[in-house]
Image 1 (cartoon, rainbow, N blue to C red):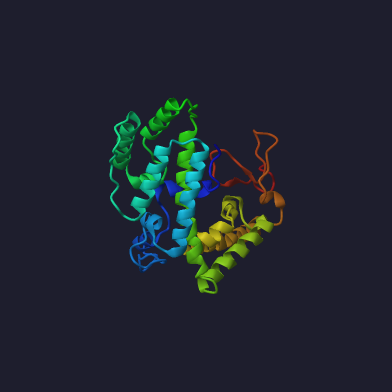
Image 2 (image 1 turned 90 degrees about the horizontal axis):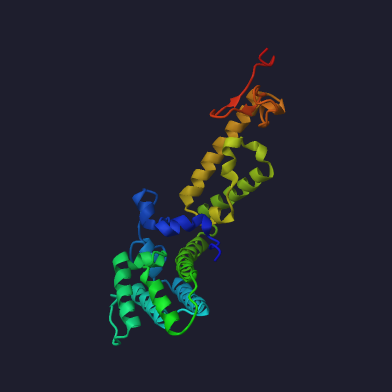
Length: 290
Protein backbone atom coordinates (compact mmCIF):
# COMPACT_ATOMS: atom_id res chain seq x y z
CA UNK A 1 0.00 0.00 0.00
CA UNK A 2 1.22 3.50 -0.82
CA UNK A 3 2.19 5.93 1.91
CA UNK A 4 -0.31 8.62 2.95
CA UNK A 5 -0.05 11.96 1.14
CA UNK A 6 0.83 13.80 4.34
CA UNK A 7 4.34 12.32 4.63
CA UNK A 8 5.84 15.78 5.30
CA UNK A 9 3.97 16.01 8.61
CA UNK A 10 3.69 12.29 9.30
CA UNK A 11 6.46 12.48 11.89
CA UNK A 12 4.53 15.08 13.93
CA UNK A 13 1.42 12.92 13.78
CA UNK A 14 3.29 9.83 14.94
CA UNK A 15 4.99 11.64 17.82
CA UNK A 16 2.02 13.91 18.69
CA UNK A 17 4.11 17.05 18.20
CA UNK A 18 1.40 19.31 16.84
CA UNK A 19 1.54 23.04 17.54
CA UNK A 20 -1.32 22.96 20.01
CA UNK A 21 -2.13 25.76 22.42
CA UNK A 22 -0.66 23.79 25.33
CA UNK A 23 2.60 23.39 23.44
CA UNK A 24 2.65 27.08 22.51
CA UNK A 25 2.11 28.15 26.09
CA UNK A 26 4.85 25.82 27.29
CA UNK A 27 7.21 27.47 24.82
CA UNK A 28 5.87 30.92 25.79
CA UNK A 29 4.36 31.53 22.35
CA UNK A 30 0.80 31.91 23.65
CA UNK A 31 -0.80 33.29 26.78
CA UNK A 32 -3.58 30.70 26.95
CA UNK A 33 -3.60 26.92 26.62
CA UNK A 34 -7.36 26.65 26.06
CA UNK A 35 -8.72 25.07 22.89
CA UNK A 36 -9.54 27.86 20.38
CA UNK A 37 -12.62 25.91 19.21
CA UNK A 38 -14.50 24.85 22.34
CA UNK A 39 -12.70 26.96 25.01
CA UNK A 40 -13.53 24.26 27.57
CA UNK A 41 -10.20 22.53 28.26
CA UNK A 42 -6.52 22.67 27.39
CA UNK A 43 -5.76 21.88 23.78
CA UNK A 44 -3.60 18.75 23.65
CA UNK A 45 -3.29 16.08 20.93
CA UNK A 46 -5.72 13.95 22.92
CA UNK A 47 -8.22 16.79 23.13
CA UNK A 48 -8.13 17.38 19.36
CA UNK A 49 -9.38 13.83 18.82
CA UNK A 50 -12.16 14.45 21.37
CA UNK A 51 -13.04 18.11 20.81
CA UNK A 52 -16.85 18.57 20.86
CA UNK A 53 -16.83 21.39 18.30
CA UNK A 54 -19.73 20.90 15.87
CA UNK A 55 -17.72 21.10 12.63
CA UNK A 56 -14.92 18.96 14.02
CA UNK A 57 -17.41 16.36 15.27
CA UNK A 58 -18.94 16.15 11.81
CA UNK A 59 -15.54 15.58 10.22
CA UNK A 60 -14.76 12.97 12.87
CA UNK A 61 -17.95 10.99 12.23
CA UNK A 62 -17.38 11.05 8.47
CA UNK A 63 -13.79 9.87 8.95
CA UNK A 64 -14.87 6.97 11.20
CA UNK A 65 -17.43 5.90 8.61
CA UNK A 66 -14.75 6.04 5.91
CA UNK A 67 -12.46 3.83 7.99
CA UNK A 68 -15.21 1.26 8.46
CA UNK A 69 -15.91 1.18 4.72
CA UNK A 70 -12.22 0.78 3.89
CA UNK A 71 -11.82 -2.10 6.34
CA UNK A 72 -14.89 -3.85 4.96
CA UNK A 73 -13.41 -3.75 1.46
CA UNK A 74 -10.38 -5.78 2.62
CA UNK A 75 -12.64 -8.38 4.30
CA UNK A 76 -11.93 -7.39 7.88
CA UNK A 77 -13.53 -9.59 10.53
CA UNK A 78 -16.91 -8.18 11.69
CA UNK A 79 -15.78 -8.67 15.28
CA UNK A 80 -12.81 -6.38 14.66
CA UNK A 81 -15.05 -3.78 13.03
CA UNK A 82 -17.39 -3.74 16.01
CA UNK A 83 -14.53 -3.47 18.50
CA UNK A 84 -12.83 -0.64 16.59
CA UNK A 85 -16.09 1.28 16.37
CA UNK A 86 -16.63 0.63 20.07
CA UNK A 87 -13.15 2.00 20.88
CA UNK A 88 -13.79 5.14 18.82
CA UNK A 89 -17.10 6.06 20.45
CA UNK A 90 -16.13 5.16 24.00
CA UNK A 91 -12.72 6.85 23.97
CA UNK A 92 -13.98 10.03 22.27
CA UNK A 93 -16.64 10.45 24.96
CA UNK A 94 -14.01 9.84 27.69
CA UNK A 95 -15.78 6.66 28.79
CA UNK A 96 -14.01 3.60 30.11
CA UNK A 97 -13.38 0.88 27.55
CA UNK A 98 -14.60 -2.39 28.99
CA UNK A 99 -13.28 -5.76 28.00
CA UNK A 100 -16.17 -8.19 28.09
CA UNK A 101 -18.00 -10.66 25.83
CA UNK A 102 -20.87 -13.03 26.42
CA UNK A 103 -19.48 -15.63 24.02
CA UNK A 104 -16.78 -18.16 24.81
CA UNK A 105 -15.57 -19.03 21.30
CA UNK A 106 -11.88 -19.03 20.51
CA UNK A 107 -12.23 -15.90 18.36
CA UNK A 108 -13.97 -13.95 21.16
CA UNK A 109 -11.39 -15.10 23.71
CA UNK A 110 -8.65 -13.91 21.38
CA UNK A 111 -10.41 -10.57 21.00
CA UNK A 112 -10.58 -10.13 24.79
CA UNK A 113 -6.84 -10.72 24.91
CA UNK A 114 -6.38 -8.24 22.05
CA UNK A 115 -8.26 -5.45 23.83
CA UNK A 116 -6.32 -6.09 27.02
CA UNK A 117 -3.04 -5.89 25.12
CA UNK A 118 -4.08 -2.71 23.30
CA UNK A 119 -5.15 -1.03 26.54
CA UNK A 120 -1.70 -1.83 27.94
CA UNK A 121 -0.10 -0.17 24.91
CA UNK A 122 -2.48 2.78 25.12
CA UNK A 123 -5.66 3.72 23.30
CA UNK A 124 -4.21 7.06 22.23
CA UNK A 125 -1.30 5.16 20.70
CA UNK A 126 -3.87 3.09 18.82
CA UNK A 127 -4.98 6.22 16.94
CA UNK A 128 -1.34 6.93 16.09
CA UNK A 129 -0.97 3.52 14.44
CA UNK A 130 0.72 1.71 17.34
CA UNK A 131 -1.36 -1.45 17.46
CA UNK A 132 -1.01 -4.83 19.12
CA UNK A 133 0.06 -7.84 17.06
CA UNK A 134 -2.98 -9.68 18.34
CA UNK A 135 -5.21 -7.73 15.96
CA UNK A 136 -3.45 -9.61 13.16
CA UNK A 137 -4.00 -12.91 14.96
CA UNK A 138 -7.74 -12.24 15.16
CA UNK A 139 -7.87 -11.47 11.43
CA UNK A 140 -5.88 -14.62 10.63
CA UNK A 141 -8.21 -16.73 12.73
CA UNK A 142 -11.25 -15.21 11.02
CA UNK A 143 -9.81 -15.91 7.55
CA UNK A 144 -9.00 -19.47 8.57
CA UNK A 145 -12.52 -20.18 9.87
CA UNK A 146 -14.19 -18.70 6.78
CA UNK A 147 -11.69 -20.14 4.25
CA UNK A 148 -10.45 -16.73 3.17
CA UNK A 149 -6.95 -15.78 2.12
CA UNK A 150 -5.12 -13.64 4.66
CA UNK A 151 -3.14 -10.76 3.15
CA UNK A 152 0.01 -9.64 4.89
CA UNK A 153 -0.81 -6.00 4.04
CA UNK A 154 -3.97 -6.02 6.16
CA UNK A 155 -2.22 -4.45 9.15
CA UNK A 156 -0.72 -1.79 6.85
CA UNK A 157 -4.20 -0.81 5.70
CA UNK A 158 -5.41 -0.58 9.29
CA UNK A 159 -2.47 1.53 10.47
CA UNK A 160 -2.75 3.84 7.45
CA UNK A 161 -6.49 4.33 8.05
CA UNK A 162 -5.89 5.24 11.71
CA UNK A 163 -3.13 7.69 10.82
CA UNK A 164 -5.29 9.32 8.17
CA UNK A 165 -8.05 9.79 10.71
CA UNK A 166 -5.70 11.35 13.27
CA UNK A 167 -4.12 13.67 10.73
CA UNK A 168 -7.53 14.67 9.37
CA UNK A 169 -8.57 15.83 12.83
CA UNK A 170 -5.55 18.12 13.06
CA UNK A 171 -6.02 19.42 9.51
CA UNK A 172 -9.71 20.15 10.14
CA UNK A 173 -8.84 21.96 13.36
CA UNK A 174 -6.28 24.15 11.56
CA UNK A 175 -8.75 25.04 8.81
CA UNK A 176 -11.38 26.12 11.33
CA UNK A 177 -8.89 28.19 13.34
CA UNK A 178 -7.35 29.91 10.31
CA UNK A 179 -10.73 30.80 8.83
CA UNK A 180 -11.34 33.03 11.84
CA UNK A 181 -8.08 34.90 11.13
CA UNK A 182 -9.16 36.30 7.75
CA UNK A 183 -8.47 40.04 7.58
CA UNK A 184 -6.26 40.07 10.66
CA UNK A 185 -2.57 40.93 11.05
CA UNK A 186 -1.68 37.25 11.15
CA UNK A 187 -3.38 36.57 7.82
CA UNK A 188 -1.59 39.55 6.27
CA UNK A 189 1.83 38.32 7.41
CA UNK A 190 1.13 34.83 6.13
CA UNK A 191 0.13 36.16 2.72
CA UNK A 192 3.22 38.41 2.53
CA UNK A 193 5.47 35.49 3.45
CA UNK A 194 3.91 33.30 0.76
CA UNK A 195 4.31 36.05 -1.88
CA UNK A 196 7.93 36.59 -0.79
CA UNK A 197 8.66 32.88 -1.18
CA UNK A 198 7.16 32.85 -4.70
CA UNK A 199 9.38 35.78 -5.74
CA UNK A 200 12.45 33.94 -4.44
CA UNK A 201 11.48 30.80 -6.35
CA UNK A 202 11.20 32.80 -9.57
CA UNK A 203 14.72 34.21 -8.99
CA UNK A 204 16.72 31.80 -6.76
CA UNK A 205 19.93 33.77 -7.34
CA UNK A 206 18.80 36.11 -4.55
CA UNK A 207 19.90 33.39 -2.09
CA UNK A 208 23.19 31.60 -1.68
CA UNK A 209 23.37 27.84 -2.05
CA UNK A 210 23.54 27.27 1.67
CA UNK A 211 20.17 29.01 2.11
CA UNK A 212 18.26 27.55 -0.86
CA UNK A 213 16.45 25.16 1.48
CA UNK A 214 14.41 28.11 2.82
CA UNK A 215 12.36 28.28 -0.39
CA UNK A 216 11.40 24.60 -0.22
CA UNK A 217 8.06 25.46 1.31
CA UNK A 218 4.54 25.10 -0.03
CA UNK A 219 1.20 26.81 0.46
CA UNK A 220 0.34 24.49 3.34
CA UNK A 221 3.35 25.63 5.38
CA UNK A 222 2.45 29.33 5.25
CA UNK A 223 -1.25 28.95 5.97
CA UNK A 224 -1.29 25.90 8.28
CA UNK A 225 1.91 26.11 10.32
CA UNK A 226 2.09 27.97 13.61
CA UNK A 227 2.27 31.74 13.23
CA UNK A 228 5.59 32.08 15.16
CA UNK A 229 7.10 29.52 12.75
CA UNK A 230 6.11 31.64 9.74
CA UNK A 231 7.50 34.75 11.42
CA UNK A 232 10.79 32.95 12.10
CA UNK A 233 10.94 31.90 8.43
CA UNK A 234 10.48 35.51 7.35
CA UNK A 235 13.25 36.69 9.65
CA UNK A 236 15.72 34.02 8.52
CA UNK A 237 14.91 34.52 4.84
CA UNK A 238 15.37 38.28 4.96
CA UNK A 239 18.72 37.81 6.70
CA UNK A 240 19.75 35.27 4.06
CA UNK A 241 18.81 37.64 1.22
CA UNK A 242 20.82 40.44 2.81
CA UNK A 243 23.79 38.10 3.23
CA UNK A 244 23.60 36.98 -0.40
CA UNK A 245 23.46 40.57 -1.65
CA UNK A 246 26.46 41.55 0.42
CA UNK A 247 28.36 38.45 -0.67
CA UNK A 248 27.72 39.14 -4.34
CA UNK A 249 29.11 42.65 -3.97
CA UNK A 250 32.25 41.30 -2.29
CA UNK A 251 32.91 38.65 -4.94
CA UNK A 252 32.45 41.04 -7.82
CA UNK A 253 30.70 40.61 -11.12
CA UNK A 254 32.55 37.42 -12.15
CA UNK A 255 29.86 34.73 -12.24
CA UNK A 256 32.47 32.04 -11.50
CA UNK A 257 32.83 33.49 -8.02
CA UNK A 258 29.16 32.93 -7.32
CA UNK A 259 28.14 29.68 -9.11
CA UNK A 260 29.60 26.39 -7.95
CA UNK A 261 31.52 24.75 -10.81
CA UNK A 262 32.63 21.16 -11.13
CA UNK A 263 36.44 21.06 -11.50
CA UNK A 264 37.84 19.33 -14.58
CA UNK A 265 41.10 18.50 -12.87
CA UNK A 266 40.53 17.04 -9.37
CA UNK A 267 44.12 17.88 -8.45
CA UNK A 268 43.73 21.60 -9.16
CA UNK A 269 40.46 23.17 -7.96
CA UNK A 270 39.07 26.10 -9.88
CA UNK A 271 37.79 29.33 -8.45
CA UNK A 272 34.42 29.03 -6.70
CA UNK A 273 34.59 25.25 -6.21
CA UNK A 274 33.54 23.56 -3.00
CA UNK A 275 36.34 21.35 -1.68
CA UNK A 276 35.40 18.09 0.14
CA UNK A 277 35.44 18.39 3.94
CA UNK A 278 35.36 22.19 3.67
CA UNK A 279 32.35 24.34 4.37
CA UNK A 280 33.40 27.45 2.47
CA UNK A 281 34.25 28.01 -1.17
CA UNK A 282 37.88 27.62 -2.13
CA UNK A 283 38.98 30.77 -3.92
CA UNK A 284 42.36 31.28 -5.56
CA UNK A 285 44.10 34.62 -5.81
CA UNK A 286 43.34 36.75 -8.91
CA UNK A 287 46.51 35.55 -10.66
CA UNK A 288 45.42 31.92 -10.33
CA UNK A 289 47.84 31.16 -7.51
CA UNK A 290 50.85 31.25 -9.80
